[in-house]
Length: 290
Ligand SMILES: C[S@@+](CC[C@H](N)C(=O)[O-])C[C@H]1O[C@@H](n2cnc3c(N)ncnc32)[C@H](O)[C@@H]1O
Image (cartoon, rainbow, N blue to C red; front, top):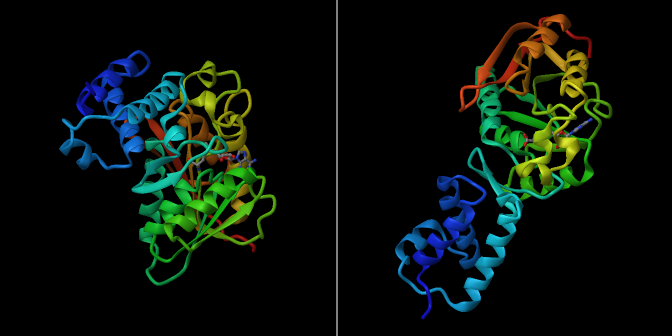
């Protein structure tokens, strides 16, 4: 007798609960079965009592086993939702995190203060899948976005994502932070740079084991990339331009001090969905030579 879809989902949830919390196990079991059956959530709900054939059971088991071995669900599915965009994700890219939506929202607030109809230059440093750049390009009126990464492989994924989403107002540049950028000023510079301490044991746990170290770790105190970006950003900001940085929950004071020492004004920190200090921004107060 073949099992029903509901029975298969219940069994998979119990298996996944060995490694992840019950609420996540339930969602992930559903997502993996949707992937096997190529159906959406509504279909799955409406067909809970349908029987699952032997081949589909075997296909489902393969995906559940991969997840039980720790492989991130975003890698198994090959995509992750971010700010309403379905983004292709590979082992060459960071898996976009919900916390990073805080940075997108904060940047959109600045972008929306800009006079309508005037082109607005935005720079995303360390674009990965293109998550931040593409969300800003899609939702920021009159935005022209430049997305930079030092990883050629990540940049290829970001370009694919832009193409798949039909987003055209974004250009992609292979660069070690600002090094190969033309010296032009940006109204808003955003970055979610690597910011984990090099010897942080979390790097050996969970999804992080499957993501590129170059997207995660940044020197002994985690602040190497942030220091470099803050030091170089003033040469690439318009007068009254904003630098907005995502950082670790315990790095807000350090990032604020670095911005202050560099001469930024109106420094402020925003909190993420878990109420952790996550994004710090500063306004560049001086007119810049271009
Ligand atoms: C934390 S990930 C952020 C990815 C994406 N922006 C996001 O929020 O999902 C950091 C990104 O910075 C890139 N990166 C690391 N060092 C870099 C450098 N020196 N220059 C440019 N990009 C760099 C990594 O390849 C990675 O894609």
